[in-house]
Image (cartoon, rainbow, N blue to C red; front, side, top):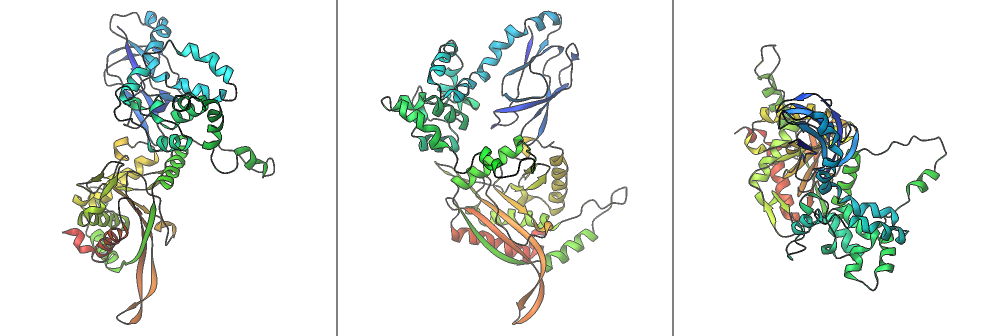
Length: 463
């Protein structure tokens, strides 16, 4: 019996990915553990390994295909003794049922362009009826049938509420039937979800729904008309840029930010850093085994501060506050086309040299998009440092599920008052962005004061 190769879920939140490259050709013999394809997400490129031996009989989804849903059939492996050609010739018939669970959620999206032509939508509705099996698991996963909890993203809930749609009537296409943004848009366009909640007003409400959900601002075409033809180059957004835009828009729309700033004296830290780096042991090539940066101290200081003020080491959910036992600190890293935030896990337990070497490895692999999802998803807080670009003060946007993020400016010589007299000192401005639902002003101030104490007395980070 042939083995189906399905589009893998590289992380719990992944819904689709790009099939970047096939590393095996049809007819190639495959062993368990062989890397057969590369999958691209918005942040990383991952390898797909074969789990069975045999011959790659059929490539169902060609390389270069974008937005392939998770669990969709992408290829077939003929088992030992099977006729690979026979398997390949039957791939179309075998592939359709295997791909239905992933492809079925696309049906509501197909109706979106037809919102202006109700007759066309109705005409297409009957062919969708012979697919009753795929919706059933999603309905059960969302609790629709049993009246249990309905799984939906915060953005989907907000859009449904704004449009007056009963979210329980929407079929989810995300992992385990989770309702996502595209499901709400599809329901708004088709009018089916609104009709379930408000039968009498369904036609008028459905017609108004797209307008209610339309973003405020000028359309693409309106913006382009403001510029002279030929005076610009149009560069389509890639997956990473779209994801960054979506997440930051959601963060600013749903998280009540507030900001706290203070200045830290850096002279003691810079002196200690110089001494530690000078004493670093050499490897066989005569190179130091580590070289600490100011950012390494910042990461460690924030982690220890979160342990000293545990009430600030939290994540907000609608039903509860998650109090974390460790400080997993994300660090914003600039990469071509955007940024990514690899996470130093349990940073409070690690030495400065370990943090330094870990960050160098993360930065190198991030630029080639080789980070694994577990290396950049989650975390309890984050650091964004623009000091190396000469920026002395800025505010960062919180990246859910974090409740805080620390924006770090450049260390610079300033005239300060010391012992009642003007003096020159190296100062660094930092700004803490906090989620006011989870971290109040006084609590945020305690966290920032704990950070300042560690930065100005860096020996405390070594014990």
